[in-house]
Image 1: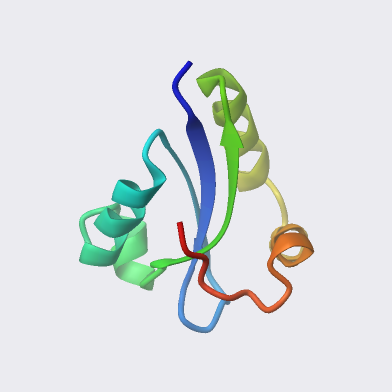
Image 2: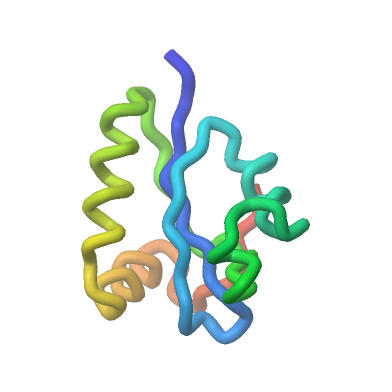
Length: 92
């Protein structure tokens, strides 16, 4: 099965988050950095990868993305800081 990823990008000040899904995390993050990832990421400059989850089934990733998009801002920060306490940009 093909791997899928749910990822969270943040702006420089870690105040705005973008949640997305992809089958190729490296390429997708590079697209966001170049400004061709989405209108939201271009507008709010959310190009810093701060969190991701890996899935083996795309339907699980889609459900998780929808779940995270409905979370409150504080819940997202708590999720991210469990793995990335200083909200540093992650390498992939």
